[in-house]
Image (cartoon, rainbow, N blue to C red; front, side):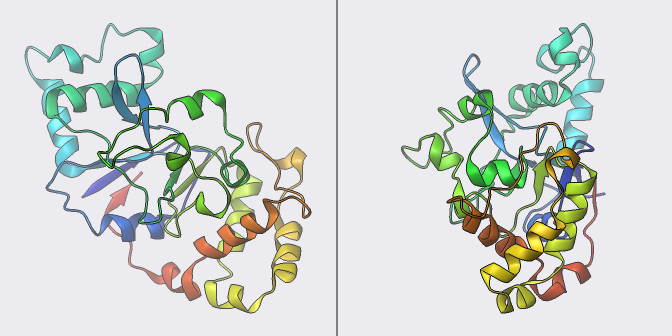
Length: 254
């Protein structure tokens, strides 16, 4: 195993994009990658557990060594924790990675500034209707790229999502099925469809509000300013001519 992807069971994952993106990295090096957030109280960054995060083989071995060490580094304790930390193992991992291994979240946005890992579903990231706590966790994020505000880390509209999008969170069964069907149409076929034609397909396949998960939002209505952005994102992240479906799987486990 070269990498492990830690992710919830109601997160939609595009494994082809995950694997092709990971091929750029060396599993022998430390890697802690996902959707970075910032904790104001500690001033530290950590990756969202909702969107999922990746650890390299070397990072996993290093953190296991820290957990097995006698005495254990106090920043890597896994027992005697508060109930909050007990229920959020990703935060425990992030703390140990930072203090013991000097391993921090990396900037996983693409060259356009669009995110690859998403802690909310398609409709919410396109419209920018995310929870307030999540918005606040993007304040003071610093990847050494000069002055950036929250909107640089949480762009909405068609810029929300990279063409190499890897995950959407809060996606239940019916939305998962709809996303897979739509993205499998392929870029070539997508390019032959007008927005009206694609919109009709999307509306026919997308589940009704009652069939969406509790935290999911319905797609924007067709007269909404974000409707065309939604179609643009679906086009952008669709499998390129179906070729991604044939991409050999990398050695990643979730």
